[in-house]
Image (cartoon, rainbow over all chains, first blue to last red; front, side, top):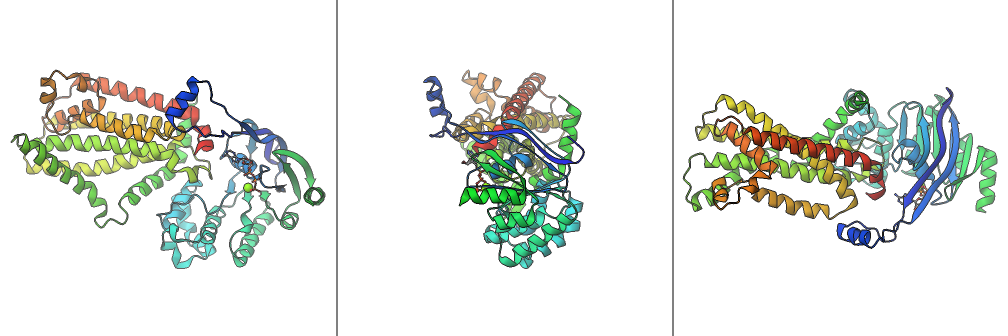
Length: 246
Length: 261
Ligand SMILES: Nc1ncnc2c1ncn2[C@@H]1O[C@H](COP(=O)(O)OP(=O)(O)OP(=O)(O)O)[C@@H](O)[C@H]1O
Ligand SMILES: [Mg+2]
């Protein structure tokens, strides 16, 4: 991978097995195995995806529902291993996918900051230092001592955003992140992301708001049923996408 | 295979492991009034009940019978609760696994370790009851470490194995709970082995590695005897084999987990 490339996606394909009747118990499995009836309905959510993002570039990912955008982001962030091809990334990754999910519901906000921070690979010292900043940014105030199960979904997203962006990442992966939370928090998030942009972070950005993509990104791609159909400067790609969707 | 790289990678996650262990223990006792004291009270109460039922009813007036029961109960409940937690470790952390990449074995190891920690705490009860019933420890008490470690390795192996199966087949959970019950009856927890051996069914113990660990533990803490070397070797071999099988099965399938949970 060249020195100035932050993300390289080479020939990536992601195959899911969409079994019509999901075989998840042993009896059925053995009966079907004996009858040689184990059908898997293969489904390629991504196929033959190739692109590179240079350091400091901000790539918007456009596409209709189910076109494979979230899948692509999960593959890049390492949560999903691609069925074919390879993904390489350089530097510290901050994946912001499904913000509210992944917390432990019985745990309080405070405890979740440490647990979730540990999952993201931070250490205790770092979290101790940044704790106040995280709570401040989330704006949760006293709710930080309340179990997460009593949070609203917006509150969970705010906490998730605050924890995930406390590092100074080299690569930021955003999946419809700026569409959660109230207007006030959205503005705050956007501001924070902008300051990261100024520091030259590389961004992979999914949003259904074309206006937002044009404002925040300089490059874009379009996914259509798992295939990359357009790649280039954001304004050009946005025009193509507009024609596709109108 | 680059072992050094694996170990280094593992050490990167030691803080996460610590947090997960802490979470498992904390949540287990959260909202209970006595909290972590239950790790002491519960084995004590079961010991009393089992002694009352099986000791008094069957006319055993052996002074140390409560300790006999307690040894079996403590070790067995570590085995059963840790394998049960290991079984659920991957499917139970689905939300996390789907969001952030972390080596998935961390979830299994953390659930085994949290049960191991509560097990170690509960050994305090054994010390207390031993003092009350005036058991005189001998130097062989140091050997108690060995069956404990063997049982830990066995639980880890079984945990990895079961966690993998549980991702693909939900019925593993029910099968395992029945299997655990069977193993418990075959582990001489609350009855003396002579009863079973007397009926010509000694093979039950000879094929049960959990029993072998319990027997060796009793040898060292209760009877003050050296270990039964044969039991030690046999259960040790089973433990290592289970760990290798569990780890390989887990490793080979871990990339598929996310598609099924
Ligand atoms: N775990 C899975 N198992 C099977 N199929 C899946 C899985 N995850 C995603 N898919 C399929 O992959 C396709 C792409 O899904 P993906 O979530 O990437 O779409 P998306 O572009 O993010 O859509 P949206 O705009 O609605 O967020 C969908 O058809 C979906 O059904
Ligand atoms: Mg999506």
